[in-house]
Image (cartoon, rainbow, N blue to C red; front, side, top):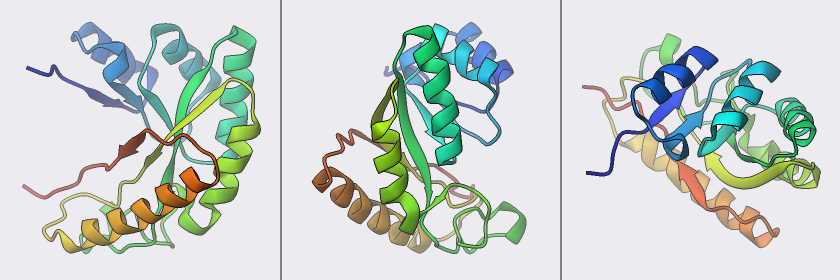
Length: 170
């Protein structure tokens, strides 16, 4: 009844999601290595949020959105330094994993994004891995995320979205 949503990682994913009838406002553009062309495509077509991997990516998106006269809805993927307890090749939330902004660096990343034109800083995202068979790592990650959201709101950021990722084993 709510309609499908999409977590896309490329322009091809974005086009397929839209072709499948997924509403633009239910699409989150995640993943590393987003290009300016992919950012432009999603901004033209609309989306719920870009999940950014770094301050450098925020700066690039700011340039793209500003050049188009648009505002990009954004959040950072935060690395909470939580071991997922799954296979090492699909674990993405520990400090030694390369994904996301380290949670200790997140306040500075959000401060910088808040200074950039063309960005609406609205969310926080986390994804600690795949095939999780225990809820304990998620509970730990979500607790850290909740503390971060409180701190970000206290610093004046209007955080409206908490993207809790996925990864439950089936």
